[in-house]
Image 1: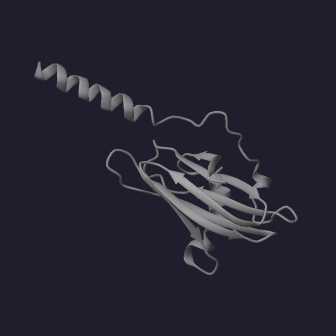
Image 2 (image 1 turned 45 degrees about the horizontal axis):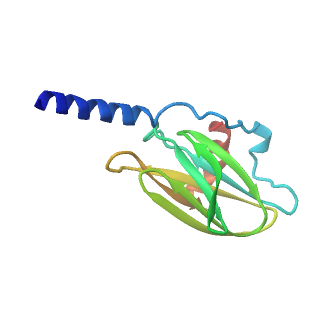
Length: 151
């Protein structure tokens, strides 16, 4: 009886972990020319980058919260990026993994912002944080390379 319970638990864990991996479906790949630091006139652009290979089998879901309702920005696997263009103003973004992290942003027109989706260890699967990258920092200097690298 103990062996049956043990095998059932192991099988359940394997199935639940494998359900988190795989390719992102029903998402369009942004053409390389769309991934630049320039924006459409009067808009703000955010480039969400997940540069780390850590927790590569777990995808992170990014949402924007509008009027207390989440709307999907994109599903981001490891070493990929999501380009999101919005109206300037105040925005609230959320990333989901094992836990949820939020980021408030007051975006200006004709500006581009870069946010790293940083994975960290969780109990069952990865947790993710939204980390804005600021100019004149070591990470900012890597941004053009990251944009070319993560298609």
